[in-house]
Structure formats: C-alpha cells, structure tokens
Length: 518
Image 1 (cartoon, rainbow, N blue to C red):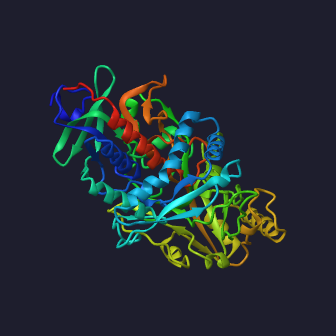
Image 2 (cartoon, rainbow, N blue to C red):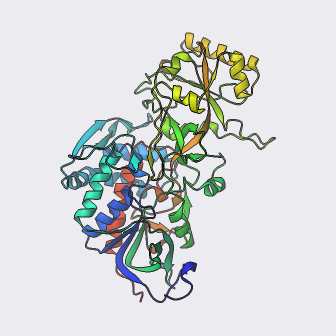
Image 3 (cartoon, rainbow, N blue to C red):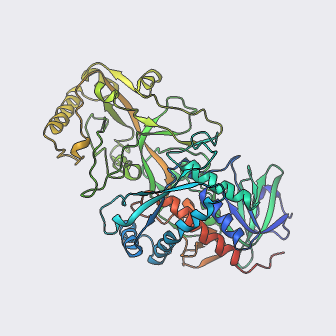
C-alpha cells in the first residue's frame, strides 16, 4: 500500500486484494445485490460494518409491495412522488415489481420457505392504489421468526425474509466479512471507481473492484449531525438500528454524487426511554393503517397529543401514521427558536390505559437488552415512561401548562367524541374516545425515524450520478441509501426497492467491463 493507511487515500497504485464486485452492507439490499452479481457470473465480496447481518431491513414487517397492474402502479407512484423522481426510474421500479414474485419464489426453494399474499391497497386514495398487494415469507421450516436471530426483532416477518436471503448467500458461498466497515471509495484519474478502503480486524485494506462497487449500506437515521443539517425537526430518535450513519452517502458525495429527497424520512412519533443508555426511540402502538374513502379507520386510539400549552395540534391518526406521523411536530417558533411540539405529550385516561400497550420495540442490536412494553402500561408508570396524575390540575403541572387551558382542551375533545366529529383536525370518528376517567397518564412524545429516504441520486440502472446526471463509472446503489421515495411513501416499498434495486445493481455491476486498474 502507498501512503498512510489510516488516511484512506481516494487513489492508490497498489491494492491489497481484488474481486469483481464489492457490495457494502448486509441487509436485504446488500444480500440481493450480492446474490444477483454472483448469479451473473461475478466474484463477489460483501462487507458489513456490524458484527451481524440484517441492517434496518430485518426489523421490518417483511412484506414486499407488489402490484397486479403495471400502468396503475406507475400512475400511483408518479402521483405520490410528486415530481421528485424521474419517470424512467419509477418505471424501472414498477417493471421490477412484476419480476419480483418469481424471483422470491426461486429464493424460497433454498429452505422450503412458505410465501403468502396479503391483499391490501396503497396507503392513499390515488388512482392505482387498489392494484397493490404484499408478498411475505410466512414460515421457514425449523426457524422461529421471533427468536431465530438473537440480535433482532421484527414487526412481523422481516426475520423470515432475512433467513431466506442468508441461506441463499450461504448456498452460493459468497464471501462475507463482518465487522469490516467501508471507509472510502478508491477513484482513478478518469473518475471511475476502482475499489474500496475497508477497515477490518486486520486493519485497513485496499480492495480492487474490477467491475464495480454497490453501496447498500442504508441511510443516516443514526447520525444526529446529518439530521441537523438536513432536517428542521430536532431531535429525531432512531427506532431500531445504530449502524446506519450515512457512510454510503459520504462516500458517494466524495465521488461526486448528486443528492435527492434529503428531507424525507419514514417516521412517526413515540417515547424516549428514561434510561439514557437505551439507544432507540419507542414507537407508539402500531394501529391499522386506513385509506380515506376506501378503507375506514375502525380501531379506537386511546390517546390524544397535546403541545406544551396543553392544546391539541394535529390529527393523531393519519392514514399512514408510520410514515407521516412526525410531520405535524415539525414546526418552528421563529421568535423563540423553539419547536413548540417537540416534545409534545400523549395523554390517556384509566379506560385507555387498560386497552392495550401504548408502545412497542423492534431492533437490530446485539448490545441492547430488549425492552418489552407491558400489556397494561403499568410497568411504564413505574419506570417513568408514563407519569400518573389523579386530576387535571395535577396533569397540567406535569405538562407545565395552564390547568384552565388543559381543562378546556379536554372539554372540547370530549364534546367532539360525543358529537362524533373532530372539526379541528379531522381525526376519524371511529378512532375517537374521551379522556374523562381519572387517573390520567402522560408521556413525553418525540419524533421517531425508522429509515431515511434521501441520499445519492441514481438512474434507472441504479448507477449513482453526479449533479449533471452523468453516471459515476463503477458506482451503484441499492435500497435505503438513495431511495426513490420523494414525498409520500408506499408501505412495504422500501423492502421492494431493496430487492428490485439490488437485482439491477448487482446485475449491472457484474456485467460492467472490468477496469484497467493495477
């Protein structure tokens, strides 16, 4: 090696190792990229910074979003992206949706995994929403999705899907190196990506990628400094994974990449654990999504959200709360430079307290003791996540607001429940329930990010491009690192994107003419 190894120079004249395609990141996108590059005839190396697989992917529900109608799917996604993603990139994704079920069924043969289809429309009532469905891995014989990975818990079947991908990686004997973070791309004089600096257990090594590098290393939800630069709302608590710190974004920018969708993240609202060492935000209970004028909201929501003044300020039950639930918290009082809704407060009464757990945790982290929310919310009263008040006046003291304002807020809300209509913010009638039976319970509420959508811009072939729209030779991306979702997100589509983008990126990298680096 030339130069000081710890400087990770962007150019070298000697490589320590070489392969055809290097894939960075071992979530769904990285695994599919590696499998696809291998099946296209390339020698593949996958590097993962963490000591275990999964990324944020393993924490998800595991459902891949597919469609029965190509034109309908394209129309829906064009609308929800609101002009932020080029038509040819959307079209490439939609084309991939119609190849994906066959591809996954082929992968499932490795361990006789059982697939299931779940018919569920898109989250918003735009043309084409009714063409959508989910494909999930319902069961992997001999594998327990709840305990099969000691370091991870998923919403539903994310661990099952990961098991299918892991077994496919193993059946192909693809070279995987854990605890090996990627540090910097190695770039030739012509601007082409020639390889990658990694830092594994044996120290820094420069690895040549004869055909290409695929960045599949997630977004920047666990990087507080990047959040501050790209988002107004602050702080935002990461929901499940500490590994996504923007590594791919930094490397791509250093290679000349353009950026898109940096403001957009998939998120909601939830709790901050009182233990400062607990690294994740705790999302509110996942209530069923609904679609205006299509599939009504029917599940009662036990809480209302109040700002620091003790007033409601939002519809607590948006159609797709897991994607847009945080947006109403994103307000700034310029006269004080404070965000009046961060934190805000979730309030329930004794009836709501007994209904169901108010929070839930998913994670991918071997260094965290899992937290399980109690079924009756009483353990959270004991540990301080929730505070108990025997009267409205006592509750106002906890919030720090005027008790008369809080009393008026409850009176207005309870009258709206009785009159079957929220004229203030349009919360669906079936979800409304009064806050009237003491004792009352309150918890501080913070913005929660599951995953980011912004990052390097890519074209329809998953090639990362510069600000002039020109592909950076030898550089590709897949998954969350530079997602196509620019305005409203389609549930399950990040996972579909991991597969669709991974298939394209792996294949394109494998088929690229080898470079002439030493």
